Length: 116
Image (tube, rainbow, N blue to C red; front, side, top):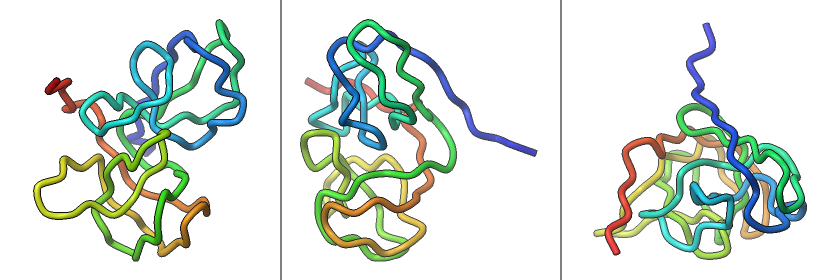
């Protein structure tokens, strides 16, 4: 049984080069974990539907080297990296990946709050 939760939002900017990055609810690339609302599954242009995985398994783009099992946080530009002490996390990596690579993780962005 598929337990993933997905939503669609209107892309607030050109996201055609941002597939598998963290996205805000306004359809723009997330720069912090607190505002990330999902992981982008498609390549929409501005104004098109952006498909986001909110809860479940998804591919993601690494903003640094990540080991299997590492907790993930937004590193900037929507890329995800291994979290450090005190970071808010979005989920964890299933596999190891080098910086700039794409691999899979398990995510839950439904409970994130904008702490700004």
